[in-house]
Image 1 (cartoon, rainbow, N blue to C red):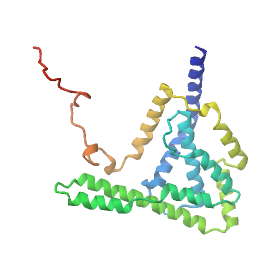
Image 2 (tube, rainbow, N blue to C red):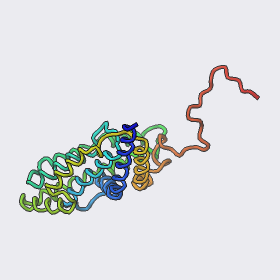
Image 3 (cartoon, one colour):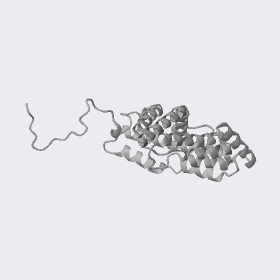
Length: 251
């Protein structure tokens, strides 16, 4: 019984901590989506690269607070904190490698091949073709954002770059001492993995809210994507409707 109460109390603390974090999480989530291609930035100064690393850390905090199962490292928040700490000391190469890993290496040739095949198919799917073209544009935006970020970094001398990084880190609350504290806090039981019904429900509500705001373009809406995400027909059939052999309807 004591263990159950302990789990319930920890879940309550996790929910309270997420409630305080939620506004910043929503802003960070939208910024990450913009960087990943929902928006093409005309410029991406160094402070925005710091903002990007900060946003990834915030989203990592959200996943930890709500105990999201990690089969992949989506945000790498702890590593982002380590990058920010080392970047303030003048180590830039790992930041560049991280940006390339997150934003580069995109399959433009394969997407173009799929678009050509969709157009040439005997029963061409206009919605699928539009969806593929839209996806290729998103990936192109992501690549352009990477180029803008690298251009801003490479344009500065090492001393000027270090100064800008330190100013941006101070703005987002990542002085070296603060980073040490933030890394230590992520080892607290509050950020431990603890599957719980209430945490799962809060995560679904939070992601539904930010997801609706992200999926606003016409090509993202059901009926405009492909037959796999088509507009449902009403009324919906039973989920597991199966006719048993020898079935007789009773009247």
